[in-house]
Amino acid sequence: MTAAPSGVLLGHFTPGSPEWEEARAGLTVTATEIAAVVGLSPWQSRFSLWHKKAGLPVPPFVGSPAVEWGNRLEDAVAAKFADEHPGLLPCPTGTWRHAERAWQVATPDRLLHPAPEDVFTSTEPVSILEVKTSPQGDGWGPPGTDEFPVHYRCQILWQQDTLGLTAPAHLAVLIGGYDYREYVVEYDPADAQILRHAAAQFLNTVESGERPPIDGADATYQTIRVQPDGLDDTDVQIPAEDAARYEQAQRAAKAATEELTAAKGVLLDHIGTGKRAVVGERRIAYRTVRDGRTHSLQPYTQKDAA
Image (cartoon, rainbow, N blue to C red; front, side, top):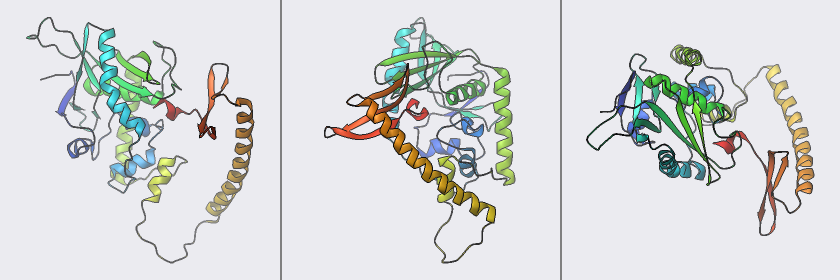
């Protein structure tokens, strides 16, 4: 059985299966959740994760083509890494927890083993490989640098700390279907301690029922939306300051929408029949076309790097 210095293998589960969900449920923090704990996740907020861990209603997971193809291409990207590193063997692995901190859970994409001398010789894992895909590549710098989305660093550092595999981890990404890049993620004990402390404090708030404050993340708003069940035809008194904040935000949103429409018009006018608006090497927005005409102008965001 594959071993790890401080990791306990919980099992090999299919992502999304009931067994997989059960292994990650309750008062645990997984590698994909730790960025939300420290407020760095583009997909979850501390508020939405708190509700999930408290067993309260949360919005259902909705798949997307990006998620589907990211899963489908994982094997291909891992195979490319193996081609580039013949001395290392990327092996599928399962879900792990820390030997002492049962609440610390991680499911790395691959564990890296030294290539065996023959088929009868087994080797122990020495490092971690995490595999990603990105449609546009925003947030990803030149290969070999530390320029990649910070929430992935949180994820990999949590994996290293959970399994005790503190040798430099590897991050491989396929951008736009053809641009393959690699990065090395160094283990930092001080940063790992910060994440552990934040996770422990977060789980304490779940146990004590201390709900995080409402923030501006869409994940927070969607979580609030699914809490009420039913509709009572009643008037509910609210604090005057909350009403004023809402009305002021509505006015600001209207003004911002008008300014955004004008700014998009200026960019589309610049682009003309082109596809992308850039400033130097930085991509700002891209134009989509339907039936030969402009359909929309879309911004390049951090989510394009998912």
